[in-house]
Amino acid sequence: MNSNDDEISLLDLWDTLIGAWKTLLAFLAVGIALGVGIGMLSPSVYQATALIQVGQVGQVGQVGQVNVTRQPVESPLLAVERLRSLTFQQRIAEATTDQDWINAIRSGADAGRIQAQLVRATQADASPLIELKVRAPSREQAKMQTEATLAELVRIHNEFAQPRIDNLRSELASNREQLEASQMRLNKLSQLAVVDRVPDARFNQIMLANMMLTQMQAEVFAVRSTISMYETALQSPLTQPTRTIEPVFAPAHPVSPARLMMLVVAAMAAAMLGVLWVLVRSAWLNARRAKQHPEQSMG
Image (cartoon, helix red, strand yellow):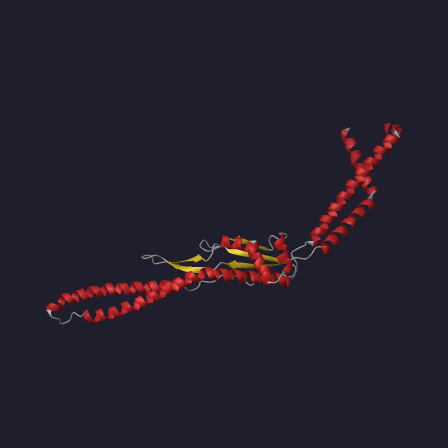
């Protein structure tokens, strides 16, 4: 019995919807029109993307450690937070003379035209990359502001790296001077350390000179090794500036608004609203008719 009632109710609902097809079509048309209108009125937003590798500076191990490592000039995580900060973004807006962006930042309406996040590198010992995204009203503007962002970040990182690079160069020059002095002493000791046909009185002196010669040779070898490490530390890839992995990419089509998605959502919302309107109106009319003619509803 309940099954029959349910079937009858479903059929009634279906007949009601079929009978109000013009109303449903009108709702759908209005929804499509609204979706198209909102999509056309919404400003286009373009996006430029770049992958950034934070600059590295070589580091020579401590005394007795024959190793050369590298360290980023700034933690990639801190670099990401720097790019996201409104102070940094305001400098970029001022550098590119984007008054609308400046006003939006000052009013608090735009809290992040520049977006950045870490991209984990494949190698375990490699620093993570930074994915930089800059959105702007035009493709050219997005690309220009991305390049300005990179230039400002490179400038800051070069300032961080310069003292460490200067220290490496100073240590390299000092070791080269030490090598030159050690080489001169080594040459003098080499002339003294001759054991062929020497009087017994000088034998002890020559033995001492040979011992000093051996020590000096070891010292020269150590200094040369240190010089080699400093030279390696100052060369790429151990020391390199902040740079992009590939050129800035700025597609010709906007990333928003998604006009097709907006149209589909608006049409679906309008269709659902139309169905709801038809069903509620039909239920209200049936209730009103039953109240006015109770004998018909009872029969």
